[in-house]
Structure formats: structure tokens, C-alpha cells
Length: 404
Ligand code: FAD
Ligand code: NAD
Image 1 (cartoon, rainbow, N blue to C red):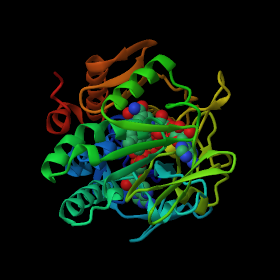
Image 2 (cartoon, helix red, strand yellow):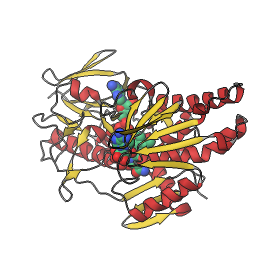
Image 3 (tube, protein in one colour):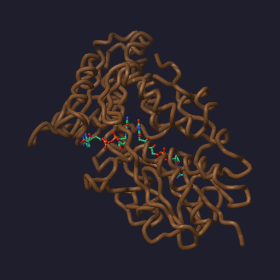
């Protein structure tokens, strides 16, 4: 019998977890395994806010995919996926078409703009390494230009962060760390800088523990960050943003830097390929297959799963993406053998939100933590992801080893 071809799309947390687990579970003769990714590197999406603020270099948040592959078992194709033809069982890329028997889609997230005018044109999004590098360079350019110009334009030093979810808050924490360095480097008076976070909901980190949220807000305010809460951003323009402060009350805020961190959706390839979806995410079957597609698994941010206890979707996180990836590798092996597939249940260990290098808040195994302890825990979590995908060698090469 012909050995099956397994194609995995995306080398993010989900896709790379499938691959690194599968290459341990199968022999080279069991299956042809192909990994397709746009770049020849994996980036730590969970560190992108650091690259965007400039507290880490873009290179530090990525590593070569080849370094974690068993090349005797996995064939890596660097290509951009353009579409999926599920009827013909083919993936269409910018380089070639690839046929599959089994497909795993792990193409990750894209920024969600909710149709708000001007955001696509005038705001940045912390979406990938290249986008993060652009944000860092843009902020530095604004500081350099402000320093040089005779008639100072204060909007060059105004940074608006749209959304006080985990991404927005983690980015603000990094900005708070980076600001003193930037001011010194570009001869800018720190008092001239304004960093404002605009949040639509009545609280920062909606739904998270209120005591921890208060800790985070107090800490960020002590670093000079301002918050405008319960005030949705309604438009971005070349000059700045418009925010809604009440019924028919709007305020224009001039700002040369607007970073939109107010939500994510799945990859638009999901919509293009004709899967039934909600914001480019597929409501998967319990074994993570796409409904009606027995040979297509969805992992990571393209998968939508409902938490039966809360009746709300699980949040799209790296934690869940990695668990889904490993689970799918086991289910693929079960399919090869003709065994039953296992349903997936996330094992949620908690959430830690960094507030820069040495501060954080979190709830881990049901316990609240703050400050240095929480910041250390965040680095442990970051290193653990490297360990799972690349072993101790990758932790030594790329890990956050400055724990104390
Ligand atoms: P991704 O990690 O996004 O990977 C998708 C991969 O697919 C990428 O390699 C991409 O290059 C590739 N790709 C995309 N399109 C194509 C294409 N057309 N063709 C070929 N390749 C393509 N979650 C946590 O659990 N903890 C955290 O602390 C945390 N922090 C975060 C901080 C930030 C700033 C952000 C933005 C997110 C954070 N998250 C965190 C969420 C987490 O990053 C995502 O849930 C996770 O990355 C999803 O993994 P994934 O494998 O689905 O996709
Ligand atoms: P999110 O959806 O969690 O938060 C977006 C925020 O933007 C919300 O607070 C929302 O009220 C606000 N918002 C929406 N529309 C707005 C508007 N018009 N104006 C102003 N504010 C508006 O998105 P995220 O923070 O990008 O997180 C995405 C996913 O990644 C989540 O699942 C999150 O848990 C995960 N993540 C986790 C961590 C961590 O664990 N440390 C860090 C970053 C992201």
C-alpha cells in the first residue's frame, strides 16, 4: 500500500508541534511528511511585542526551522500557501501544488480590524517578525525626526495603542522599558512623550482577575502610560485617531504611531478555501478535524473550540496551539493504523502577562502572582516552548536565561 502523504501548513506553535511530535512517533517509511511555511524560520509570536518595542532584536525572536526537523523524515518546503483545494486534496502555493492524503492547517492569526475605517492604512499590527521590525523602526524614525526638526511636532512622540487585551498590555510594558533608552539615544525629553492606551471595554484586560488588573494598571501608570477606558477607537487617519468618548462625543488625537492590538482572527486562507468559518476560524470537531473533512485537521488560531463550562470560545493561545499540535500527531498515527481518534481537551495551566522585562501579573495553577516572581514565571513558560519544540540546545541558543 502507498504510504500516506501528510502536509502540515504553517511552522508556528501549532504546526511545528505536529511536526516535532510526529517525527518522534513514526519511522521514515511510515509516511511522507511535508512542512510548508512562508519563511525558513519560526518566530515566537508570543515575543513579538518585544521586537516591536525594540527591547529584543527581530533576530532574537526567530530560529531556523531546519534546526528542529528530522530531515530523514520531514521534507521542508519554503512557500506561501495561496489556497487549499479540499476536493482535489491539493495545496496551492506560490511555488508549486502539493497533493496530500492528510492535511493539517496551522496558518495562525491575522489582525482583526472589525471594519474600522483607516486602520488597515494608518495603523500597525504586531502580526509577525517583519511587522514588528517595522513598528520598532517607525518609532525610532519618529524620535530621530523630532530631535532634528526645528518646529517640533508633538504627534511624533505620541504613541496610541488600540486595545488593552494581553497583546496591548504586554506591548505597553515593553514600551515603558524602552522609553528611557529611546529618549537618551535621540536626545528627547521624556516629558514630551505620550503613550496612550485606548480600550473599548469598561476595564483593562476584560474578564481577567480585577486585583491583578489593578496591579498592572498602577504599574504602567507609574511609568507614565495613560489609559482611556470605555472609549472605542473609531477611526485612524494619517494624522492620528478618533475615539468615542460618549454618545455623539468624539475626540481626535494626533499621533504619528498607532499600534492596533485589539483582536485577532484566523488566516484568510481559511475563508478563501471555502471552509465554513467564523472570522477565518473553523469550529472544529472534538478530534480537531474540520467538519465534513475527515482528512483535514485544524490547529492553533485557525481552530475554534467552545469551552463547554463557559459556553464561550477558548482564547486563541500558543498554550492551546501546542497541545493541539501534539494531540494531532497522535491522531494522525491512529489514522495510519486504522485506530479510533481521541477527542482533544485543553489542559489550561494559567496565564502570565508580562509588563516589561522584570514585571508581570499572572494566574498559574489557580494562584495569583505578580512582580519579579511572575516575570520569572513568564520566562520559564517562554523557555518551555523552546524546549518542547527544539530541546535543551534551542533553549541555550535562544532562551531567556537572564532570569534573576
Ligand atoms: P502562528 O504562531 O501565528 O504561526 C503561523 C505560521 O504560519 C507562521 O510561521 C507563519 O509565517 C505561517 N504562515 C502564515 N500564513 C502563511 C501562508 N499563507 N503560507 C505559508 N505560511 C504561512 N499565547 C500564549 O499562550 N501565551 C502568550 O504569552 C502569548 N503572547 C502573545 C503575545 C503577542 C504579542 C501575540 C500577538 C500573541 C500572543 N499569544 C500568546 C498568542 C499566540 O501567539 C498565538 O495563539 C499562537 O501564535 C498561535 O499559534 P499558531 O501555530 O496557530 O500560529
Ligand atoms: P484580545 O481580543 O484578547 O483583546 C483585544 C482588546 O481590544 C479587548 O480588550 C477589546 O475590548 C479591545 N477592543 C476591541 N475593539 C476595540 C476598539 N474599537 N477600540 C479600543 N479597544 C478595542 O486580543 P489580543 O490582546 O490581541 O490577544 C489575542 C489572543 O492572544 C488572546 O487569546 C490572548 O489571550 C492571547 N495572548 C496571550 C498573552 C499571554 O498569555 N500573555 C499575550 C498576548 C496575547
